Length: 174
Image 1 (cartoon, rainbow, N blue to C red):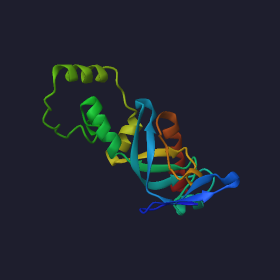
Image 2 (cartoon, rainbow, N blue to C red; image 1 turned 60 degrees about the vertical axis):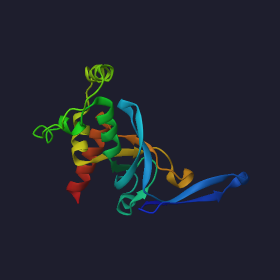
Image 3 (cartoon, helix red, strand yellow; image 1 turned 180 degrees about the vertical axis):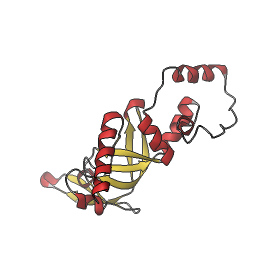
Image 4 (tube, helix red, strand yellow; image 1 turned 120 degrees about the horizontal axis):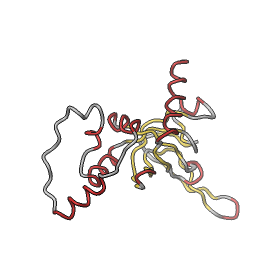
Protein backbone atom coordinates (compact mmCIF):
# COMPACT_ATOMS: atom_id res chain seq x y z
CA UNK A 1 0.00 0.00 0.00
CA UNK A 2 1.29 3.44 -0.94
CA UNK A 3 1.52 5.91 1.93
CA UNK A 4 1.58 9.69 1.89
CA UNK A 5 5.03 10.57 3.28
CA UNK A 6 7.70 13.22 2.68
CA UNK A 7 10.45 10.86 1.45
CA UNK A 8 9.32 9.25 -1.81
CA UNK A 9 10.27 5.61 -2.32
CA UNK A 10 9.52 3.87 -5.63
CA UNK A 11 10.90 0.42 -6.39
CA UNK A 12 10.90 -1.63 -9.59
CA UNK A 13 9.16 -4.99 -9.24
CA UNK A 14 9.53 -7.88 -11.68
CA UNK A 15 6.16 -9.23 -12.75
CA UNK A 16 4.85 -11.98 -15.02
CA UNK A 17 6.44 -12.08 -18.44
CA UNK A 18 9.65 -10.44 -17.24
CA UNK A 19 8.10 -6.98 -17.29
CA UNK A 20 8.54 -4.46 -14.51
CA UNK A 21 6.07 -2.40 -12.53
CA UNK A 22 6.96 0.44 -10.23
CA UNK A 23 5.75 -0.05 -6.68
CA UNK A 24 5.41 3.26 -4.85
CA UNK A 25 5.79 2.68 -1.12
CA UNK A 26 5.77 6.38 -0.23
CA UNK A 27 4.91 9.43 -2.34
CA UNK A 28 4.82 13.17 -1.70
CA UNK A 29 4.06 14.72 -5.12
CA UNK A 30 2.13 14.09 -8.32
CA UNK A 31 0.78 15.58 -11.54
CA UNK A 32 -2.72 16.99 -11.31
CA UNK A 33 -4.90 18.40 -14.06
CA UNK A 34 -7.28 21.36 -13.77
CA UNK A 35 -9.86 20.21 -16.31
CA UNK A 36 -11.80 23.42 -16.99
CA UNK A 37 -8.56 25.34 -17.63
CA UNK A 38 -6.78 22.50 -19.50
CA UNK A 39 -3.61 22.81 -17.47
CA UNK A 40 -1.55 20.24 -15.58
CA UNK A 41 0.98 20.97 -12.85
CA UNK A 42 3.19 18.92 -10.55
CA UNK A 43 2.17 19.64 -6.98
CA UNK A 44 2.69 18.42 -3.41
CA UNK A 45 0.26 15.97 -1.83
CA UNK A 46 -0.92 17.30 1.52
CA UNK A 47 -3.58 15.00 2.97
CA UNK A 48 -5.83 12.03 2.21
CA UNK A 49 -9.35 13.35 2.86
CA UNK A 50 -11.86 10.74 1.68
CA UNK A 51 -12.03 7.18 0.46
CA UNK A 52 -15.34 5.62 -0.55
CA UNK A 53 -14.23 2.07 0.18
CA UNK A 54 -12.60 2.27 3.60
CA UNK A 55 -12.12 4.82 6.39
CA UNK A 56 -8.93 3.08 7.53
CA UNK A 57 -7.28 4.12 4.28
CA UNK A 58 -7.96 7.75 5.22
CA UNK A 59 -6.73 7.28 8.79
CA UNK A 60 -3.49 5.65 7.63
CA UNK A 61 -2.98 8.20 4.79
CA UNK A 62 -2.97 5.48 2.10
CA UNK A 63 -3.01 6.53 -1.56
CA UNK A 64 -5.20 4.39 -3.82
CA UNK A 65 -7.10 4.99 -7.03
CA UNK A 66 -10.20 7.23 -6.68
CA UNK A 67 -9.34 8.50 -3.21
CA UNK A 68 -9.90 12.22 -2.62
CA UNK A 69 -6.80 14.06 -1.47
CA UNK A 70 -5.76 17.64 -0.80
CA UNK A 71 -3.00 19.09 -2.95
CA UNK A 72 -1.05 22.34 -2.75
CA UNK A 73 -2.75 25.16 -4.70
CA UNK A 74 0.43 27.24 -5.25
CA UNK A 75 1.42 25.88 -8.72
CA UNK A 76 -2.11 26.45 -10.07
CA UNK A 77 -2.30 29.88 -8.45
CA UNK A 78 1.01 30.88 -10.06
CA UNK A 79 -0.19 29.61 -13.46
CA UNK A 80 -3.47 31.54 -13.11
CA UNK A 81 -1.61 34.74 -12.29
CA UNK A 82 0.68 34.31 -15.29
CA UNK A 83 -2.14 33.34 -17.68
CA UNK A 84 -4.88 35.77 -16.64
CA UNK A 85 -2.73 38.61 -15.30
CA UNK A 86 -4.34 38.66 -11.83
CA UNK A 87 -4.07 36.66 -8.64
CA UNK A 88 -6.97 34.25 -8.16
CA UNK A 89 -7.14 35.24 -4.47
CA UNK A 90 -8.55 38.66 -5.47
CA UNK A 91 -11.64 36.89 -6.85
CA UNK A 92 -12.47 35.37 -3.44
CA UNK A 93 -14.39 36.97 -0.58
CA UNK A 94 -11.23 37.16 1.52
CA UNK A 95 -9.36 38.85 -1.31
CA UNK A 96 -11.92 41.62 -1.89
CA UNK A 97 -10.39 43.80 0.84
CA UNK A 98 -6.81 43.12 -0.24
CA UNK A 99 -4.91 45.75 -2.14
CA UNK A 100 -3.84 44.53 -5.57
CA UNK A 101 -0.15 44.56 -6.40
CA UNK A 102 1.32 47.31 -8.53
CA UNK A 103 0.40 46.71 -12.17
CA UNK A 104 3.08 45.02 -14.24
CA UNK A 105 4.13 46.78 -17.43
CA UNK A 106 3.14 44.69 -20.43
CA UNK A 107 3.32 45.20 -24.14
CA UNK A 108 0.09 46.13 -25.92
CA UNK A 109 -0.18 42.71 -27.56
CA UNK A 110 0.18 40.86 -24.24
CA UNK A 111 -2.32 43.20 -22.54
CA UNK A 112 -4.81 42.59 -25.36
CA UNK A 113 -4.31 38.82 -25.09
CA UNK A 114 -4.95 38.87 -21.33
CA UNK A 115 -8.00 41.13 -21.74
CA UNK A 116 -9.45 38.71 -24.32
CA UNK A 117 -8.89 35.75 -21.96
CA UNK A 118 -10.66 37.58 -19.11
CA UNK A 119 -13.78 38.50 -21.15
CA UNK A 120 -15.95 35.42 -20.55
CA UNK A 121 -13.87 33.72 -17.89
CA UNK A 122 -15.52 32.25 -14.77
CA UNK A 123 -14.09 30.15 -11.94
CA UNK A 124 -16.25 27.87 -9.79
CA UNK A 125 -17.12 29.56 -6.47
CA UNK A 126 -16.34 26.42 -4.45
CA UNK A 127 -12.95 26.24 -6.13
CA UNK A 128 -12.26 29.88 -5.24
CA UNK A 129 -12.88 29.10 -1.57
CA UNK A 130 -10.29 26.34 -1.78
CA UNK A 131 -7.73 28.64 -3.42
CA UNK A 132 -8.20 30.98 -0.45
CA UNK A 133 -7.16 28.16 1.92
CA UNK A 134 -4.24 27.10 -0.29
CA UNK A 135 -5.47 23.50 -0.61
CA UNK A 136 -7.42 21.97 -3.49
CA UNK A 137 -9.38 18.73 -3.42
CA UNK A 138 -8.26 16.30 -6.10
CA UNK A 139 -9.12 12.77 -7.16
CA UNK A 140 -6.37 10.21 -7.83
CA UNK A 141 -6.77 8.53 -11.24
CA UNK A 142 -3.55 6.52 -11.36
CA UNK A 143 -2.80 3.39 -9.36
CA UNK A 144 0.17 4.41 -7.19
CA UNK A 145 1.00 0.86 -6.09
CA UNK A 146 1.11 -0.35 -9.71
CA UNK A 147 2.70 2.48 -11.69
CA UNK A 148 4.68 4.32 -9.00
CA UNK A 149 2.99 7.67 -9.62
CA UNK A 150 0.12 9.63 -8.12
CA UNK A 151 -1.69 11.52 -10.87
CA UNK A 152 -5.21 12.87 -10.98
CA UNK A 153 -7.49 15.85 -11.49
CA UNK A 154 -8.77 18.79 -9.46
CA UNK A 155 -12.39 18.37 -8.34
CA UNK A 156 -14.81 21.00 -9.68
CA UNK A 157 -18.53 21.65 -10.01
CA UNK A 158 -21.05 19.04 -8.89
CA UNK A 159 -18.38 16.43 -8.19
CA UNK A 160 -16.66 18.81 -5.77
CA UNK A 161 -19.97 19.61 -4.06
CA UNK A 162 -20.73 15.89 -3.73
CA UNK A 163 -17.42 15.06 -2.03
CA UNK A 164 -17.49 18.13 0.24
CA UNK A 165 -20.98 17.11 1.39
CA UNK A 166 -19.79 13.52 2.01
CA UNK A 167 -16.81 14.73 4.05
CA UNK A 168 -19.00 17.08 6.10
CA UNK A 169 -21.36 14.17 6.83
CA UNK A 170 -18.43 12.00 8.00
CA UNK A 171 -17.14 14.80 10.25
CA UNK A 172 -20.54 15.33 11.84
CA UNK A 173 -20.83 11.60 12.66
CA UNK A 174 -17.45 11.55 14.40
